[in-house]
Image (cartoon, rainbow over all chains, first blue to last red; front, side, top):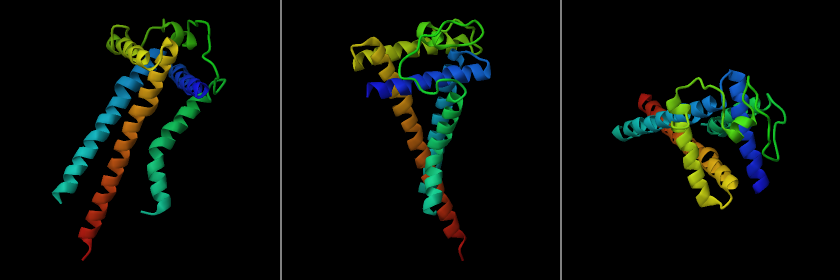
Length: 60
Length: 134
Protein backbone atom coordinates (compact mmCIF):
# COMPACT_ATOMS: atom_id res chain seq x y z
CA UNK A 1 0.00 0.00 0.00
CA UNK A 2 2.87 2.34 0.94
CA UNK A 3 4.67 1.55 -2.33
CA UNK A 4 1.51 2.29 -4.34
CA UNK A 5 1.07 5.56 -2.44
CA UNK A 6 4.66 6.65 -3.21
CA UNK A 7 4.25 5.64 -6.87
CA UNK A 8 1.03 7.68 -7.29
CA UNK A 9 2.32 10.65 -5.26
CA UNK A 10 5.63 10.77 -7.18
CA UNK A 11 3.77 10.49 -10.50
CA UNK A 12 1.56 13.44 -9.52
CA UNK A 13 4.56 15.60 -8.55
CA UNK A 14 6.40 14.54 -11.74
CA UNK A 15 3.29 15.57 -13.72
CA UNK A 16 3.43 19.03 -12.12
CA UNK A 17 7.19 19.45 -12.62
CA UNK A 18 7.22 18.15 -16.21
CA UNK A 19 4.08 20.15 -17.03
CA UNK A 20 5.77 23.28 -15.67
CA UNK A 21 8.89 22.62 -17.75
CA UNK A 22 6.82 21.96 -20.90
CA UNK A 23 4.90 25.23 -20.42
CA UNK A 24 7.94 27.27 -19.36
CA UNK A 25 6.50 28.15 -15.95
CA UNK A 26 7.32 27.10 -12.37
CA UNK A 27 6.19 24.17 -10.22
CA UNK A 28 4.27 26.62 -8.05
CA UNK A 29 2.48 28.02 -11.13
CA UNK A 30 1.22 24.62 -12.30
CA UNK A 31 0.04 23.76 -8.77
CA UNK A 32 -1.67 27.13 -8.33
CA UNK A 33 -3.31 27.03 -11.77
CA UNK A 34 -4.60 23.47 -11.41
CA UNK A 35 -5.79 23.61 -7.80
CA UNK A 36 -6.77 27.28 -7.37
CA UNK A 37 -8.05 28.14 -10.87
CA UNK A 38 -8.92 25.17 -13.14
CA UNK A 39 -10.35 22.62 -10.68
CA UNK A 40 -12.42 25.18 -8.70
CA UNK A 41 -13.75 26.59 -12.02
CA UNK A 42 -14.67 23.11 -13.29
CA UNK A 43 -16.28 22.16 -9.95
CA UNK A 44 -18.34 25.36 -9.74
CA UNK A 45 -19.24 25.10 -13.46
CA UNK A 46 -20.45 21.51 -13.08
CA UNK A 47 -22.41 22.38 -9.92
CA UNK A 48 -24.13 25.25 -11.78
CA UNK A 49 -24.98 22.97 -14.74
CA UNK A 50 -26.46 20.39 -12.33
CA UNK A 51 -28.55 23.05 -10.54
CA UNK A 52 -29.86 24.62 -13.79
CA UNK A 53 -30.70 21.23 -15.30
CA UNK A 54 -32.39 20.07 -12.07
CA UNK A 55 -34.60 23.16 -12.20
CA UNK A 56 -35.43 22.45 -15.87
CA UNK A 57 -36.31 18.83 -15.06
CA UNK A 58 -38.61 19.86 -12.19
CA UNK A 59 -40.35 22.56 -14.26
CA UNK A 60 -41.60 20.18 -16.94
CA UNK B 1 -28.60 5.35 -25.40
CA UNK B 2 -26.67 2.28 -26.51
CA UNK B 3 -24.51 0.48 -23.94
CA UNK B 4 -21.27 1.24 -25.84
CA UNK B 5 -22.14 4.94 -26.15
CA UNK B 6 -23.00 5.11 -22.44
CA UNK B 7 -19.68 3.50 -21.55
CA UNK B 8 -17.85 6.05 -23.71
CA UNK B 9 -19.74 9.03 -22.23
CA UNK B 10 -19.22 7.99 -18.59
CA UNK B 11 -15.56 6.97 -18.96
CA UNK B 12 -14.57 10.10 -20.94
CA UNK B 13 -14.29 12.34 -17.81
CA UNK B 14 -11.74 9.84 -16.43
CA UNK B 15 -10.03 8.70 -19.65
CA UNK B 16 -9.28 12.17 -21.08
CA UNK B 17 -7.50 13.60 -17.98
CA UNK B 18 -5.73 10.23 -17.50
CA UNK B 19 -4.49 10.38 -21.11
CA UNK B 20 -3.17 13.92 -20.60
CA UNK B 21 -1.57 12.87 -17.28
CA UNK B 22 0.26 9.93 -18.87
CA UNK B 23 1.31 12.00 -21.92
CA UNK B 24 2.97 14.62 -19.70
CA UNK B 25 4.59 11.89 -17.56
CA UNK B 26 5.96 10.27 -20.72
CA UNK B 27 7.76 13.55 -21.51
CA UNK B 28 10.36 12.67 -18.84
CA UNK B 29 12.16 9.71 -17.41
CA UNK B 30 11.53 7.59 -15.43
CA UNK B 31 7.80 7.55 -16.03
CA UNK B 32 7.07 5.99 -12.61
CA UNK B 33 9.19 6.02 -9.44
CA UNK B 34 9.40 3.74 -6.41
CA UNK B 35 10.94 6.35 -4.09
CA UNK B 36 10.90 10.12 -3.61
CA UNK B 37 13.95 11.38 -5.54
CA UNK B 38 16.54 13.96 -4.47
CA UNK B 39 17.52 16.11 -7.42
CA UNK B 40 19.83 19.13 -7.47
CA UNK B 41 18.58 22.68 -7.92
CA UNK B 42 18.64 23.96 -11.51
CA UNK B 43 18.52 27.65 -12.36
CA UNK B 44 16.62 27.35 -15.64
CA UNK B 45 13.88 24.84 -14.76
CA UNK B 46 12.05 23.17 -11.89
CA UNK B 47 13.20 19.79 -10.54
CA UNK B 48 12.29 17.72 -7.47
CA UNK B 49 14.43 20.24 -5.55
CA UNK B 50 11.48 22.64 -5.91
CA UNK B 51 9.17 20.10 -4.27
CA UNK B 52 11.57 18.98 -1.55
CA UNK B 53 12.99 22.36 -0.50
CA UNK B 54 10.57 24.99 -1.85
CA UNK B 55 10.67 26.41 -5.37
CA UNK B 56 13.27 29.20 -5.72
CA UNK B 57 12.11 30.22 -9.22
CA UNK B 58 10.02 33.33 -9.88
CA UNK B 59 6.38 32.34 -10.54
CA UNK B 60 4.32 33.79 -13.39
CA UNK B 61 1.02 33.86 -11.46
CA UNK B 62 0.44 36.44 -8.68
CA UNK B 63 1.85 35.96 -5.17
CA UNK B 64 -1.70 35.76 -3.80
CA UNK B 65 -1.89 32.34 -5.49
CA UNK B 66 1.72 31.12 -5.52
CA UNK B 67 3.38 32.77 -2.48
CA UNK B 68 4.16 31.22 0.89
CA UNK B 69 1.79 33.77 2.45
CA UNK B 70 -0.76 33.17 -0.33
CA UNK B 71 -3.05 30.25 -1.17
CA UNK B 72 -0.13 27.96 -2.05
CA UNK B 73 1.57 28.34 1.32
CA UNK B 74 -1.70 28.10 3.25
CA UNK B 75 -2.67 24.94 1.35
CA UNK B 76 0.70 23.30 2.12
CA UNK B 77 0.21 24.22 5.79
CA UNK B 78 -3.33 22.80 5.73
CA UNK B 79 -2.12 19.57 4.14
CA UNK B 80 0.56 19.15 6.84
CA UNK B 81 -2.13 19.74 9.50
CA UNK B 82 -4.43 17.16 7.91
CA UNK B 83 -1.45 14.82 7.46
CA UNK B 84 -0.62 14.98 11.17
CA UNK B 85 -4.09 13.52 11.81
CA UNK B 86 -3.43 10.68 9.35
CA UNK B 87 0.08 9.59 10.37
CA UNK B 88 2.68 10.24 13.04
CA UNK B 89 5.33 10.45 10.29
CA UNK B 90 5.35 13.98 8.85
CA UNK B 91 6.24 12.97 5.27
CA UNK B 92 3.80 10.04 5.15
CA UNK B 93 0.99 12.17 6.61
CA UNK B 94 1.59 15.00 4.13
CA UNK B 95 1.68 12.60 1.17
CA UNK B 96 -1.45 10.80 2.40
CA UNK B 97 -3.31 14.11 2.81
CA UNK B 98 -2.33 15.09 -0.75
CA UNK B 99 -3.53 11.78 -2.17
CA UNK B 100 -6.77 11.90 -0.17
CA UNK B 101 -7.71 15.45 -1.21
CA UNK B 102 -6.27 15.74 -4.74
CA UNK B 103 -6.50 12.14 -6.00
CA UNK B 104 -9.67 10.84 -4.28
CA UNK B 105 -12.09 13.36 -2.74
CA UNK B 106 -11.95 16.34 -5.12
CA UNK B 107 -11.67 14.36 -8.40
CA UNK B 108 -14.41 12.06 -7.04
CA UNK B 109 -16.68 15.05 -6.43
CA UNK B 110 -16.02 16.35 -9.97
CA UNK B 111 -16.74 12.92 -11.46
CA UNK B 112 -20.01 12.56 -9.53
CA UNK B 113 -21.07 16.06 -10.68
CA UNK B 114 -20.14 15.19 -14.29
CA UNK B 115 -22.16 11.93 -14.18
CA UNK B 116 -25.20 13.71 -12.68
CA UNK B 117 -24.94 16.46 -15.33
CA UNK B 118 -24.75 13.88 -18.15
CA UNK B 119 -27.73 11.91 -16.78
CA UNK B 120 -29.78 15.09 -16.44
CA UNK B 121 -28.85 16.14 -19.98
CA UNK B 122 -29.95 12.76 -21.33
CA UNK B 123 -33.23 12.96 -19.37
CA UNK B 124 -33.94 16.45 -20.74
CA UNK B 125 -33.16 15.30 -24.29
CA UNK B 126 -35.46 12.28 -23.91
CA UNK B 127 -38.29 14.53 -22.70
CA UNK B 128 -37.84 16.92 -25.63
CA UNK B 129 -37.95 14.01 -28.09
CA UNK B 130 -41.11 12.63 -26.47
CA UNK B 131 -42.69 16.10 -26.73
CA UNK B 132 -41.93 16.33 -30.47
CA UNK B 133 -43.72 13.09 -31.28
CA UNK B 134 -47.19 13.56 -32.85
